[in-house]
Length: 146
Image (cartoon, rainbow, N blue to C red; front, side, top):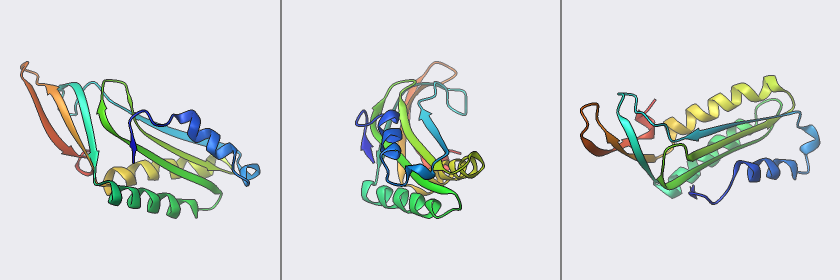
């Protein structure tokens, strides 16, 4: 887990390029999760706060990455989730998969995203405006927010 603003997608890509086994990489794919301006229920999002059970979340994210890195053709898998307060459009999570070919990296990227959302103890507090104009906030588990 990382505090908001402590790294960029460029930092992560550069870390792959600096690997000794970078010569095996023919494809790098990334996912950037951002603060969406509307909830699944159509409420207007004003702001998000993300917190995590950090030790367990770090362990879960590391396990996902380690497991997925063993897949055929995969060189590196990274998941970097942020905590803190976020405005609309700000980055929340970076997922990177590097591998030999595009057909290796795309399925693993999708699996990495789905797994962190289901498995990591990350919680978000949404500050929203309801369809009727009422301001409210509530905590939502990432694992329940599909």
